[in-house]
Image (cartoon, rainbow, N blue to C red; front, side):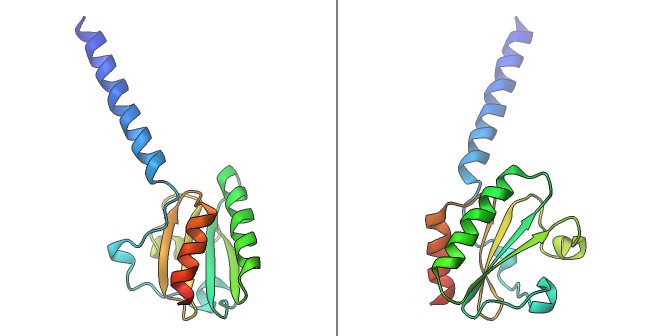
Length: 138
């Protein structure tokens, strides 16, 4: 009987953790330690957008990365002066470590000067990306 109670407790805790992680994934937010992050064209290997830049860290076998690439590409195409940059996390390990990228996709929204405005871990919603861009270009 004790084994059954332990099993149910473990299932309840892991289910709760899964729900919390699913709810928080893909949200565009600024974390406290990211406040001073500034990336340059040299860091990214391509020029920054005139108004803002959407930076996506991806990996080869990441299914949500493909959908994120499509969403970010569409949003970048809607707003003039916004660039979308996809970076292979495996080939840019120094930058990944410097920015504390732990999962793919990770999306960074940068302003015109390369300053971090928002960050999302997981696949962001199109409406959230558009709202973050509004903050970046303002």
